[in-house]
Length: 345
Image (cartoon, rainbow, N blue to C red; front, side, top):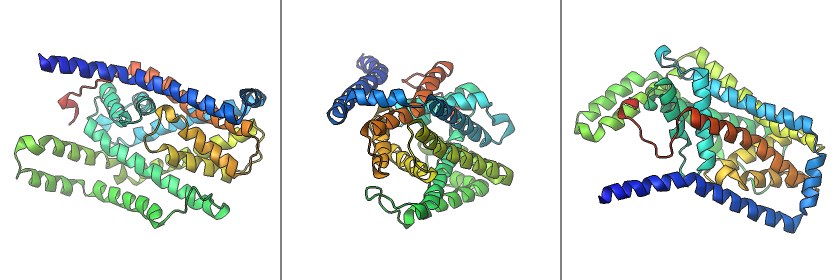
């Protein structure tokens, strides 16, 4: 009877999580509005927003949607086994669900779990197999970000709060890529080694973890094909270019005479600032990073800075929330996630 009560309490808590986060969002917005009112009047912000050119904003929205489509296409390419290759629609909606969950409940990092769960529900692809593709994706994103930093550094003097990148920044992504290729091409040997190790332990101890590890290694199969690797890198570069184009296009909406290099620096700083789990919807963190960069570029109009950061944030987050909400319905996502053991392997 106690167990049933505990299960009911746990279920109730999980159902309340989205609403608690929504309440936190409202509180954060209230604090933000109160703080801004002390710095610049709401009328000035509304005035700057009303004067913004809608055409660059619509172009920026199109860039964001295209970025999401390319990310889904890239993820689909990582599945190379013919009978375990998801459709583009399945990959897209699973990706949207993952981003939506991470935005709503950022503290628990459930987005990746939701993503592979949704793909399993739609395409019956083993969840462990998807883990390897997520590792490849994250390493590619880090590599492109570091490459972007390497390109823009000769042209700018980084603000003191950004700090100077050390050797680890350059060595880590290179080491990660080399490690991925090693695991991808030595999967058979590593699998046999894991199976030999597992023999020395009771089946109920390591059976499931080793199944996950072996299936995860198979998720690196895309790297064994030179053609597929080239496509993945090309798509990652295109996504990086679009990510820089978005803040650059929005400069025109607020008549900011800033360069593509400065747009790239905004993207890099915002990406780094919003990577760790923070507030729901990245409220405050995203806006603050963008605003600080505009201040460092010499933009003097507080109303324009705040308006730019708000529009930039909305263009990035609103499509993910709207599409993610649709994805939650299409994939039958529940906050109290129960995974069938057969879906793991």
